[in-house]
Image 1 (cartoon, rainbow, N blue to C red):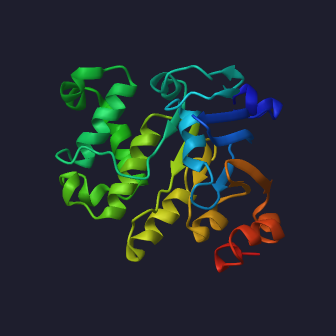
Image 2 (tube, rainbow, N blue to C red; image 1 turned 90 degrees about the horizontal axis):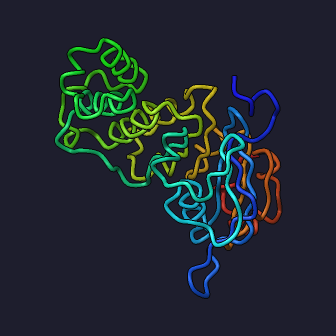
Length: 259
């Protein structure tokens, strides 16, 4: 168990994050604590600053002000690839997959790279039992066994989203940032994806960015609401559902009526 888990300190922490683009303030003094094993959702209307915050946390952008820590280590100026190596892994709104590779090949590449085998992954796939076993585990966990040998570009979109999350989990993250995992997934394919997201390992701390309120309220035990680049409020799903400010932001739409 990590020190963060033992002490109750955040595994990922944003402290007063400000990001300005010229005269525009995209995030304004955002503070966010993601606890060990959290199921934490980040919600807000379009333009609230959610994507900017995630880009700050993952190192795509550097903050104008503020700090970011991962397991107590200051990572504010750490490059994105180094953050991933330290256990901060992200999925994206839009699939970023190799269309010509199969799920098996994609996961073998990811697992081999994570295990330090690098460019020798084609040989390692046949020679290293640990790589093959880990790939099989992930294929089963993410319901991809039946399509493991099909080129990614022919997969149903829901399966592509599952593969993307499987890739992220293959990196053995301590913190997983799920960026709108059901975006664009047809209704008939959503149930499998929602169920799989709900069954992610308990020791992986998850920050979910999502517009789908059904997923948000079924998944999250803690929620942060962003409006105009700042934190409006934070609380349990019940508290957020009953919050009059949140209802006003969403114009009273049913998307927050999950109390």
